[in-house]
Image 1 (cartoon, helix red, strand yellow):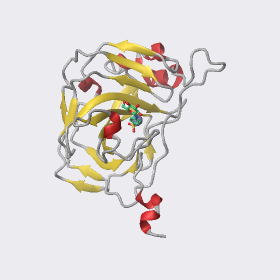
Image 2 (cartoon, rainbow, N blue to C red):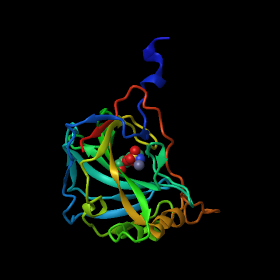
Image 3 (tube, rainbow, N blue to C red):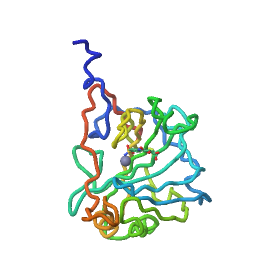
Image 4 (cartoon, rainbow, N blue to C red):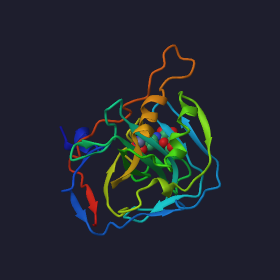
Length: 249
Ligand code: BO1
Ligand code: ZN
């Protein structure tokens, strides 16, 4: 069999395990997050799609720099979590799984729609943030967690007043991240994603985490049985011959 007929060796899927010994790339600077510290004016919605809770943000934000090949418009952010007392991040660091992971999904601005982006090997740029748990509430994260009961069931959508996305992100060390080329972690699992996974986590409280693991269901309101939405993370994939870079610092 020709090596090119060996799909497994060619695949580059996400998530993966990350570790501190990966190739350091001093030329990777902090990304430019345009509009993230402004109060946006667009129409924002939170939606339960049965696989996650998705915050659809309006136009007006983009990411670039940090070795990204182009400018990418921010579309949405969503979350992956575990169960009662089990962690649910998608990426792992030194095989350790964090309680949750937030993904900010961005589409290369030159593309008119998602279909076009999925045909481009670097059509999407996803920013991944680990979420760790502490005793005190994160008031900024409350913009989302307080709305979860309004999207308890699959198919439900609620309005969210726009707030600066920067308020959700770590205050320090945003120049420390992992960079690799991978895939969407849910179907169609397209291998078109430039991944940036930040080293420093976001902190929320135990009760804010519990709102995700207990208030959100993967089934519709009128379903015979309600099933909690838990453990909505994909297993880690082999890196094969891929280079995973670690930014400077
Ligand atoms: S993730 O960040 O790798 N977990 C991920 C996985 C799947 C999608 C996005 C991010 N899917 C697509 C949906 C489209 C949607 C688009 C942007 O996200 O399949 O229907 O338009 O929101
Ligand atoms: Zn995701």
